[in-house]
Image 1 (cartoon, rainbow, N blue to C red):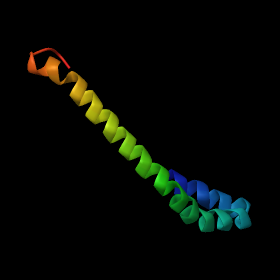
Image 2 (tube, rainbow, N blue to C red; image 1 turned 120 degrees about the horizontal axis):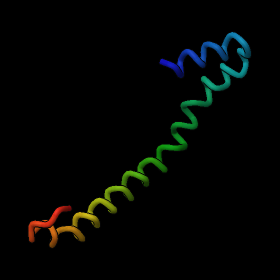
Image 3 (cartoon, rainbow, N blue to C red; image 1 turned 30 degrees about the vertical axis):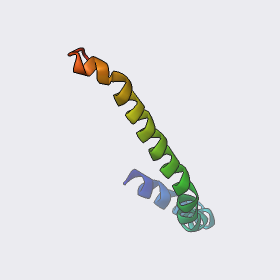
Amino acid sequence: MIGFLLWLLLLVFCWPLALLALVLYPLVWLLMLPFRLVGLTVEGVFAFLKAVIFLPARLLGGRP
């Protein structure tokens, strides 16, 4: 909601910049999508490695 209100404020003060932001936002989102997918994959790999490393401690009853 705050983002929308800021965009409306930008629309009032500088409407060409607000319209440019409205057009470029989907393009930037599409460009960032592969980086988000890579980030999710790396996060999943690290979570898996952490689970594998702490598995012996969990089996022996230690705190994770």
